[in-house]
Image: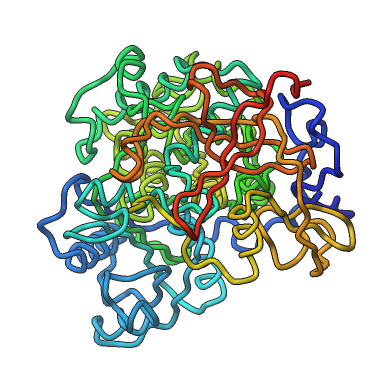
Length: 433
Length: 140
């Protein structure tokens, strides 16, 4: 199979692109997706056997390590296992474990009182908890481990964007960009707002369409007992538009939460799933990643994410399913514009059509593609390495355990996690069997 | 005393860009093999992967590609400046770079606006890149 090579970024020759400041550096050059290899050997052979999440919101009075162990034990119990069954961990352990941030696996093993057989980490920003699913799948199918846990926690007084101090969290997030950006006073909100401005300019996407995403997801959150914003009740498009502009064109209600919380998942081989756990098994049938840039100006077209396109294309090819077969989705939603970009980049609608898709109710609980049915990062939780919460909701939907927000027919799900400002993306196709 | 963010942990080899700003010119890495501009600075060329570069003076002229008006700043140090505009500008040389956009009211900013480089001397050591609307006779 011949693979088209990826064009380099920002490679316009001198003089090109300056003729029309209204368009991209090379406006007619589509980003080309290299053909991924064929189906992976672990298609369907790995199951997300256990999930657990705390009530999301304020855990500032709790020990982060205690919450980590609590939510991990909860995910084990959900799978019909105990902590003593865990022999692999992906990602960071309880905060402070290991030696100055190194060797978390050894530190976790010490607290378990026995050695672990496997530890690995992804470094794909907040997407790492979804990217970890792939690492776990490799370990399980190769026999390096039998039960692998992935968890995240934001609790206690904390630091960084898990901090209990909101001002400190906002300042920390502003400096998640590089020094060429943050010295100018950019923020995490403006890092996404520049995509929204460009998308609106190119496709006519409106502030009302962005607001519709916040409204749809807030309603879903009112049906989730653990959500942060659900208890505040539903909102309207007018509420979103009347909320203060944070970084034009994004209003406060276009932005994700900044909150604490914890979540964990446990993965096993599908052949090892315990019927006693009592859940419909949710298997991993496709997975892909994309890692594209650090400098936002390295992306030629800021109405799309090369990383997300690549991740979704890989995941769907490996799963051998089409977009139209997907019943429920979790699309990374740090900001409302992220959902539009995510839907388009994953191929659920054509470029530029994300706005009308959401405005026509496409992502609602009764819509064509129910999306972020927990409320997502906008209204459910944006805690720690938050992609795990997007995944947990899709698992609960595919199990048929989503309660009042259950989607009627939920057999096939799609999940994305985005790291940074569209810089990295992980995507997974999950199926209830 | 300036309380905004200053660049941290910049490797020494990236300093010619910042030193050029301090002299009120802009020098951007340019690949000696293929001629591609490298902004941000990179150890190897993103187009041909060659290492060798020169620091090339650019015209400083371009057009707004996208922007945002920041109303909720990252820290209190920026509060006195809100609302301020962050612009990503397609430079005449074909690459895009970021700067604040000043000397214009936020509602007047639009994609395609012709701009030229300006310099914010925030401390004796550091000058940050900014843009201002290009003089009318200079716009195309």
